[in-house]
Image (tube, rainbow, N blue to C red):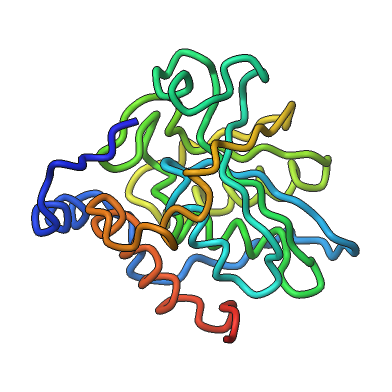
Length: 216
């Protein structure tokens, strides 16, 4: 996985300015977002899992976020092998949440508006390869319906300059990444890649969704 460690922080910020998908206006709420009860999980892929994990960890109602791999088999589900882009996996996060506090549709709204650029095919910012693809892995028919309906809704509204390339696939397995990739931003707040590509997402989250954030 390319993490541009040799670039200076200033150059990283310049790169980020050209690759982030910040929206000038809020995305619409999902039209389809049925109420459910009991603890639920969602698995989403939007490029490097470091930043995606940090975005969802900040949301009220989210109990846990684990970085890992989806879309491939258990064999080869480790960082070094997945980084070759040949295993079928995508860097993903597994989100455990309370739907009484935050809905699946709200998670998808944050996913599309803040966590990544859903119009980039098999890449995200400086990272290239199918392991960085935009994907939603559903575990229930309801999740599939909400995801597909929201993608159609956003495409029809032309809220992005290009069509969304996010795939919607059955969750066949989620495999946690190595310990060094969990809570990476908390443990490495001044990493150049984090400063360039992930901190701007957190700032945008705070700006666009203050009502969804956890209170300290």
